[in-house]
Length: 204
Ligand SMILES: O=P(O)(O)OP(=O)(O)OP(=O)(O)OC[C@H]1O[C@@H](n2cnc3c(O)ncnc32)[C@H](O)[C@@H]1O
Ligand SMILES: [Mg+2]
Image (tube, rainbow, N blue to C red; front, side, top):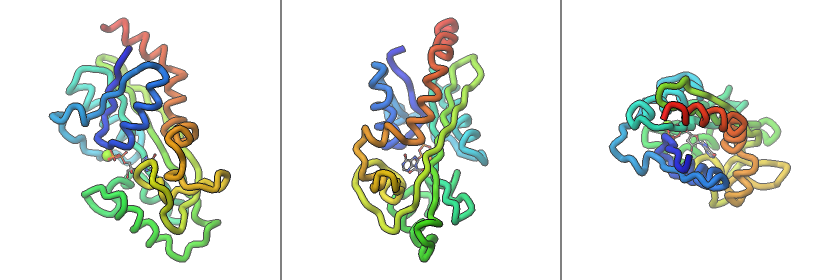
């Protein structure tokens, strides 16, 4: 296979998938390339449910193999919030800067050792006529007291990895793709990739 569709309108995610799949010589298309595909409502209560909803809706529409990513940030001191609501934490417009400002406000006064958090990533692969495959992975860190760095997207400027002494937004794309929740989930998918794609070959 030379091309895969990622069911996302998030340019940051699309960029990371493009780099991760480039190693395999596979070109990534996102929903930014298919503007007519309508938004899928994320009504699930877990990352896995939402990834499945997005992958199956777009697969149904395009009749092609599709991967969807549902991801987010779970902060221990906030009982796991923003969780599945990470994208719209500060409002419907999905504004990264406002989401970060709200998060920092909610954690005001919480000491560093209690600012533990993890990024979650659920990936769902939907192929016409086949059961959907789902994998999940996480990446542990801390919520910094102020944003730092220009790279990545979303909550990366406040996601601090003490072992590197940097926020994820201070990582190069290669560094982030070596350790991120998304890269780890994709590595899990990779283990099943040949099997998934072999089945696909038979249905073509
Ligand atoms: O649903 P799609 O179209 O894929 O795009 P989205 O941006 O709405 O994506 P999600 O519903 O999965 O919400 C993910 C939220 O978690 C954030 N997020 C996910 N992965 C991240 C990462 O690697 N670094 C920083 N923030 C991330 C992201 O900014 C969003 O606020
Ligand atoms: Mg979304």
